[in-house]
Length: 425
DNA sequence: TCTGGGGTCCTAGGACCC
DNA sequence: TCTGGGGTCCTAGGACCC
Image (cartoon, rainbow, N blue to C red; front, side, top):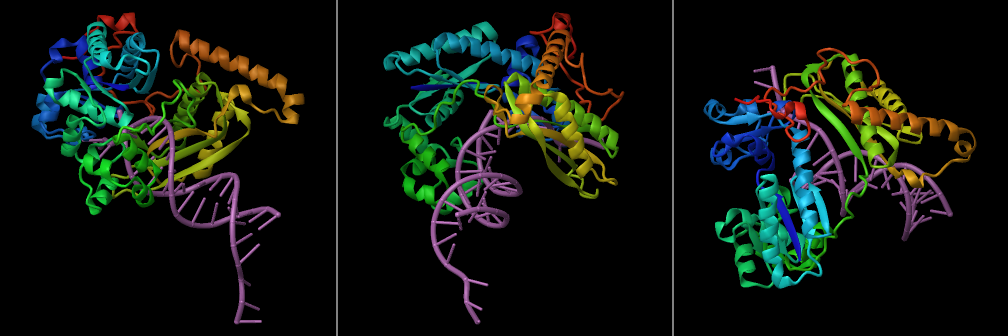
């Protein structure tokens, strides 16, 4: 059996742990630059506010009633680690799927005891972190997702729902569930399924897997098997290295200045390189992209990207930033007001398994060791003394890449100096 | 004035090779 | 007038997830 543990309105729940007066009120958390709603309390959902709704398009009445907060990723990331540390006490097999969701394997556990175990897990998370979670237990991940949804929506389950593949209760649930509520089936696929007469999760489960694969893909075929209780989606290794890595941001205001794009790309590139070193990989290529704001129909539009190969697989910020600047030079055009840019590191390879070219083996080794030591020092200083203690190139005041975050709460769990600060009123 | 930032996997189609 | 067949690799783009 596998359990999916999913926090309820995770970002909002984190905020409420440290501001209990937000309980019972409509609360939303905004994306970077305070742009869109990315987390909603039940009260905010009840007001009809959609996920991803742009803040500036919300009706004034809702903006008056609701508490809308800037996103505080330092806080959410730390709370997420705390939740996962508790999960690890309940099973050796924890796979972190996202900041607010983890799969927990109960292979080898007494099946009859799993539900009780999950209730204790849920209560412990709530008691020790303050975060409410729902638990869905089933033989496959797709069914665990279904179970989790039921656990959250149907009070009778008290937060823990177990679904066995062949149980009548499972069938009843799947017959009432729209196909598009199944994990991995979204609008496009749902529209095509409807043309085949498949509207519910149960109908999808009963469809011929062969036919589904031909009409769609192996991805959807696996979902059919999973709905039937046959595992078809594997548990990935915990902490497996990413295959690509991106850092990008919208500007807090549009900018046409090449220097501002260059400064933003230095910032993003340096952060991407740091992530790369943290996961122990090397990149073989750097992709740079820029674009204008596609929502502004009256503005001239431009979007472009460029892949710049690196001379050798590298995790050296200087080489990555140099490549990013070459990419920018190739795609920057005058006469546009840019809204966003970013750096993606591609073709990542494991640092320990790097292949040395003959040239590197003879000439480059000393330089490489020097680079490794320098980067290690940069990372340590930034880790211990705070981000941006060491950075590449001069910062600018009032840079467009600086985020707007006007309703930011304190980093309660990671900064002593912010613990007692009260900022939201 | 203001519309996020990451990721994954799969498929189709072109380039290239023999 | 005539112009194979099959394989691999790579990239772009679609669709989906949180």
